[in-house]
Image (cartoon, rainbow, N blue to C red; front, side):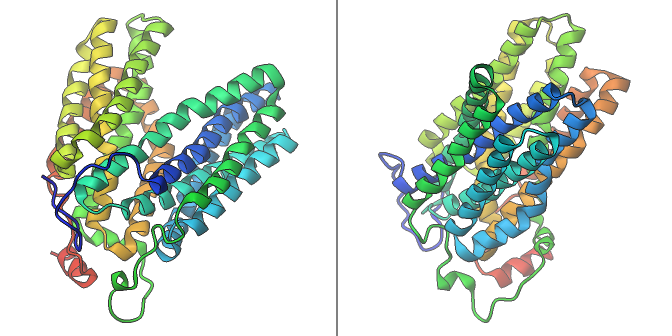
Length: 414
């Protein structure tokens, strides 16, 4: 049974329905993320339609992750100081500006601006949502339950945004698609008014005694639990990328059709969504660090056997198990960020986590390409099996930090 957070009641009865504020937070993030995912489909297609080559499209796609990485720390610090609404307004404005630029001017520079601005809006809003949602929890079990709902936002948005963009591109053209995508951040700005004004804002008692002193975000890395959590987070993000990169190569080597490879990916996606619906029912029985350790051990086992599977059915079943493991671990990671970081620096901790993910997204495909070219797909799976197996052991060391920031700093040096 999960223990309560400091200053809360021990009871943790699951709520009969999602709180209205949490529902609004999740829907706001769906709007921002669906906008970005729609632009991720429309922008490169319009660039190719305008005669741009693969290198130009690669630069365009890289811009979706560049500004979120650069702006992550300012976003986290703003969420720490002001709660949800100020960073949410900036996030909505960035996405609205990006889609507006793309709708008004379809040339390559406008598409690059749209990619950078929409990526920044989604990343800015994500940090504000994650920090504010975590502060709604009264216990660690409830926090895990909340983050399982928050983790549904990217999955839903990943279906909604590209579908909306694709239909409108085919039937009304690129300009109409971008204009329709602009309605999503506009709706988010309206929906954000349903979130209470103090959501995510620290109470005065949380700030600790004495005047606030700005400290570098990298100071958080002095804490061993936070370093272990970043390692776990990096392994999870890399596992997603390895599977998406190596599966088509492995399928091509085995002579599988595009439909067969697509069905394996579909089994992975469906299992990932299903487990996030299941976690809220079981959160009061789960410990985040054991979820992370068990999930990474399961990922290691799947990666170890996956290259040995010959048929589509076996691959699809293994992909479903992988989806269950990786789908369960993200809510546990988000919940644990709030456990291992001081309350007044949780936004910064989420920002550091976001930066590592976005930089990994930019760098790791280059490494995968080099290794895949020289070694083939199977060694990529086996290397990740070894890495995630080691990560499963490290996840056991992700323990809550002391509530007092001074104690946190002393503990981090041990």
